[in-house]
Amino acid sequence: MKVSVVIPSYNAGEQLGRLLLSLTWCRLDAGDSLEVIVVDDGSTDGTRELVAGVGGDLDLVYIFLPRSAASGRAAARNVGIEKASGELVVMVDADQICEPGFVAAHVGFHRLREDLVVVGPRRDLGEGRFDDARLAAGFARSAIPEVVRGDGRELVFAEFSENFNQLETCWHHMFSCNVSVRREHVMAVGGFDEGFTGWGLEDSELGYRLRRAGLAFAYQPAAVAYQRGHGVTPEMFVEWQRNLAHFAAKHADAPEVWAQAVIGMAFNPADRSIGWLESMCRLEFAARALAGRLPALTGLAWIEANDGNAARVLADIKDRVATEDLIVIDDSDGAVLAGPVQCLDTTRALLYFWRPTAQARDALRRRHVIID
Image 1 (cartoon, rainbow, N blue to C red):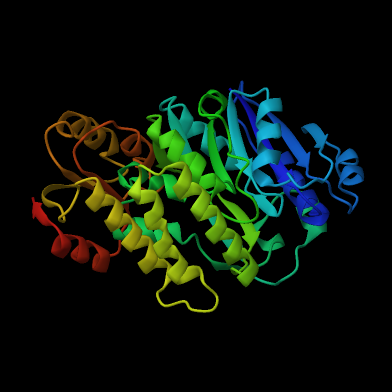
Image 2 (tube, rainbow, N blue to C red):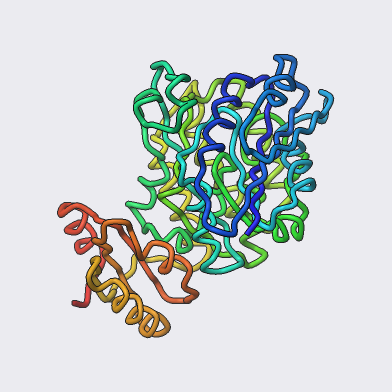
């Protein structure tokens, strides 16, 4: 499989340099290949010279777009996707850094089915320094600042299921800082909507159209990218509100789209009346109610898997998922059932959790009526 990593960049030279360096260390399976496409969105910080100086074996394509009123991440990504020669497109942001297994982790899930959107986690780094000399010799966790915050979406999964495809709002969580999809699917739905300007929601809206087109969604915990954390500024919140209005007007027949307004109660710097997790839970419950998926599930069969029985358990799940609601507890070392479970087609409930704590297991049993 040929993979195209598409990176929009605007005056992010130093961070982009680290990202490109980390991509040179990415391991691929035999027969796979990688190209990296940098779309320079009118930078004035020497990005062109930085990219020209990148050595190694990286197959690197550089595209410069003059800065204009139409500039933005949606337009820049569209140019990169149009240029891409890979069948699979992986999207990341210029201010990130990836682990060596990042690309292969995305590709591994896409081998399970072809109509898939794969999302990976982003970890927020603290204010410590990067050891650039150490990174030049190969990726090392010790060469990057301390991780101060995990991916908030994993808190949502803990509430509902780590089977991302079972979230009614999976489309909202398709953040373009770490996502992959076959190029043909992005092109078929028209790419990013360039009517989104400033910060927020252009990626969720693309996710919404991909979901409506019938694609499945999966979360790949092994496809890890790191970034400096940042909060929502008043200016960003104004842009987000404007983009939400554009999103809702475009899909006026879809009340679940406008339900995203609840997130503003967590994003608004002037009045954060609820927390982010609560806003996400409210959004998911609203979308489920609109889809007729409430009240809470009852009568789920409880299935446990480990490294010794994972293959047998998966075969059992495939047989039962057409007629039963299941909750799968995966105690394997590498979450070996994460991909196969998320890629199963079913109209029944298929909840999945990897190594939940004893407290979380008890909470799941209290929340649902379990058939042992």
